[in-house]
Image (cartoon, rainbow, N blue to C red; front, side):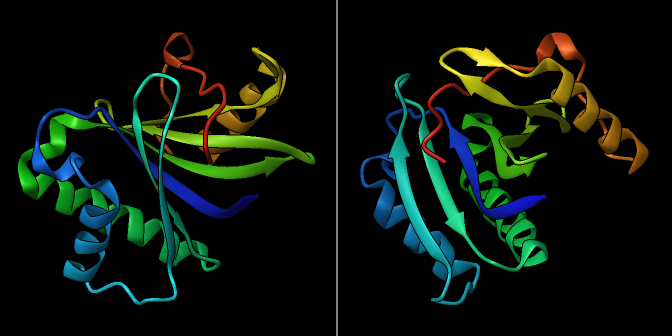
Length: 151
């Protein structure tokens, strides 16, 4: 089950977009004509990676938001700075993440179970659900964890 939060992960550089990420995020949302009821926040993780986090209770609208936002970032010539889109989920009562690697346009699951521990069995089950639903799946050796994700 997908929850109501998703994020775009960016590797910052000296572009003005990153100088005031909150302002830049709001500007992009206005440009793509997103309604004001969408909750947004930004975060920086332990690696200095920037997260633009959007909250929307309608899953299809959330997917559309992430897609439109990503396209706009790409139009701003920041496409190479985009690392992944991340959807927060729940699998068998456990927190999970569904991650789209922007470089390969393939998805992979991440199910953290504690401090630097993950549930590979659940990840494999989620990956199989992706395949059944014709969602392209990243090769398991490229399933990178998102420890301490701000999402």
